[in-house]
Image (cartoon, rainbow, N blue to C red; front, side):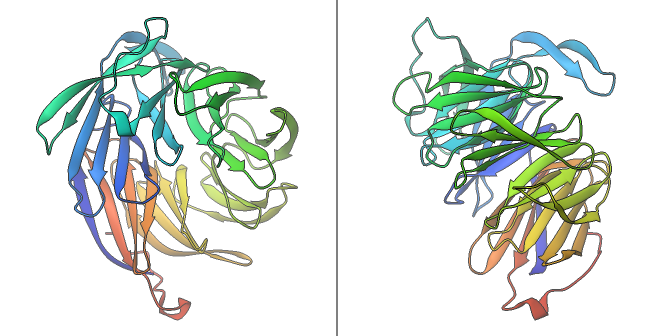
Length: 363
């Protein structure tokens, strides 16, 4: 995998997370501070649509001062798709819940008045028009963060930072509000990352406020056990071999652990505050957004450890990463929280591992 070029794509400051649709044709960027969602065409890198939430006053949270502050409810944090990209689920930081956006029926009619909801305005830049979107709000808990679905799109898990809990929603794709909360799982401390193991019917939750990974049984939605890991785990990924890849924000490390037992296989240091991590399709490379380190680290995953092959200087507090791949290339899109742009890094795939270039060049 050889680095080729990078490109800046203009957005508002405060983009928290990124995700591609399943085909990789579109990229969605969630701006917490901009209170909007950007939809990009992946190939042309052009902005197609923008969804702007109508702001309403609410209590927010100042993480540096650790106190409540005046803010707005409609601040998108994280998202995931369900039902083959039909519904985009979005967590709203200060709204105490999530909203479903039915992508193939935009603009949507106003939901029944008995349903709580949010108003957003969708601008189509190609058609040069704006429509109003009405989105039902499903209450979960205080400060919802990560959202993860089961592969069959029957259930959705939401980690609630402020409530120290995970909410489980049962989903449908035909009747608003498209989900109903069926369980609340109280956790030992503040949660964030979620990884769903569909094969073994388990959900793993990173207890960022401690040093545990909580394992939930997806058959009864109850806690099975807690796995001990280093402090401050933030983001989780599960590979096809039953290994958990974890970013540890406070201690600037990433690690690989056996999901079943929590056994540590190997760890490595990163730049400061590794946040979102992303795994390549062949599970040979791990990308890391290092927030305070203003860097994007790229590691090759070997049987007994990580080897750093790239470290890109990325100013503006990189926080989110999403990957696109085809047989010839890989693109890593990165959100920089304090910058007014996204970064799109392009890599050419090598024919074999012998041509991988190791570097710490600053691009």
